[in-house]
Length: 405
Image (cartoon, rainbow, N blue to C red; front, side, top):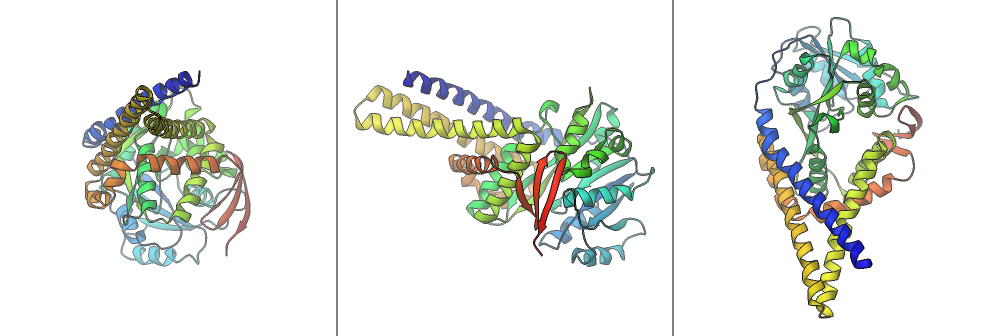
């Protein structure tokens, strides 16, 4: 009976591994072709909402990228918690070099009943007018390609069945530290799942919605006590019958990965905890998937070693075959994810090459780290995000507990 159970589990995991390889192949070969297509020439007035905090190594470059998009009709509203934030001085210096109204600064104040990022975004949206036909939301740590805004806006012109558009991030390691490789690969796994409408949710680092729909779908009201901007917006859009979120591969944006193990554990646990509370089925499927992969991998290794030791050649050979097939599929999947990242972000290919061997050989260790953080995220509702301690009561209810001054 035990053997039958393991055979069934092995069979399921091998099918899942083949499916994962197919998704990675789509990401590696199909997505770059889609990204190379000419973007739709639909050019409404756009207000780009940029919640930002602090000055980091990539802040200047990221701001320059937002301000120099190959798109004519847009303005940028940078929004901060406090006028004392050092990034305000950077923004004011940039304002001096730009036409009036191209870059505005909104001070949102401290959030008391919602996430600070949501607070900042809401205050910026309140500063828009009816002339701003589309709202685009961009993270301060996202480095946009020059065509990103046009690509993000274009599909909204297809018709009312496109309720929102979204890009996603791809982590670029600043060095070959294992933590940076792990976050790059685990994030690439998620990135490869974007595409078909049924799987797509919005990502707050690059997403767009018509201003009328932002209010019509009730996003403003849903954000009032929310912690997560993107999960909440996705829920508001997807609850409308026949309305979809469109993924834009041209807006796969480079984000800097500069982590140690402590900061990576905190980051991934927070992200997965928000996912568990906002979309329980996504967290559960990821947990089961990682757990089944590791169970199959290490049980195959165990039965192969013990079988050879006990001279049970048939069982040992079969277990070894499962182990080899699963690992080869993992190697192929990792290399395809790496190829997709290099093709979609060619200017960052050299940085990705620093961790190529992690993509090729490190899949079991990445899955182990993912499972660790997924399990940790399965307990509790408290988290710290940019120095603020929150309790996420529900997807639409947040308590601000304390701040690290």
